[in-house]
Length: 287
Image (cartoon, rainbow, N blue to C red; front, side, top):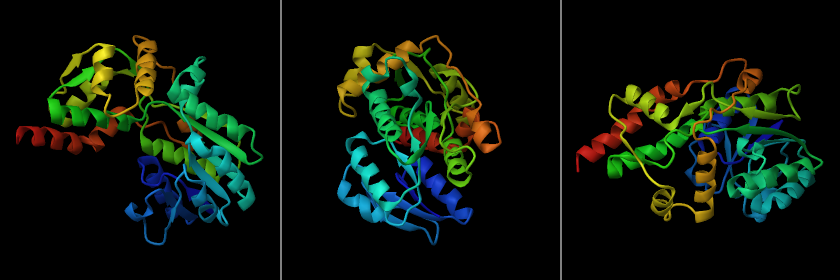
């Protein structure tokens, strides 16, 4: 069995490549920039840009299963190439944002929903992972601390369910290596529903440094992000945070169902990544 892992530079993709390699699977690591990959010895790197159909046939040659990131622009072409190559199973990394009744009106959710719908109409068997907020999203606060010394939060009381990227990778690994859970959709969450301020407090304990924040307006936050994301995406995030402000996120046991262990806590993630935040404070102090 040959497995193609797209997005192999990412936290989830790279962890999945390592898991499959350690299990003895024939794994092919795909990326738009394969030369930048750091891979276990013996793992093949291939060029596969999910917005460039010309890269699909060679990457998919002799592949049985695919771990696929939700890139909507060329999903149809990718599925055609996968079917032509004889791919039997695709594990899609989607998002729990598609569960919102208004998902089609949110640009972030809509992009994932479009890919899910395309795969549902495809003859290739599909398993779908719908994780909530990645714990690694907290890295955005590192840059804010380094540059400004404080974090801007438009909705400090907005709840999330931060999930460790390793848990997502292990869930995908289960779907790619075991037949019984295949063909279903799994809503993955972390073990706790936490507000942004609760996450900052956890980081403070892990790092041993303060994580000050300032409550800002939607407009101010959107203006500050103008150079980093399209306005429509900023609005999508703001609308989501507004909808979860003061409303705890429902949790699932899907991680344990697929991996056999409870989901890792945000506190565990913070401990593992504390040095990255310590570096941010040291860099700021050195200025």
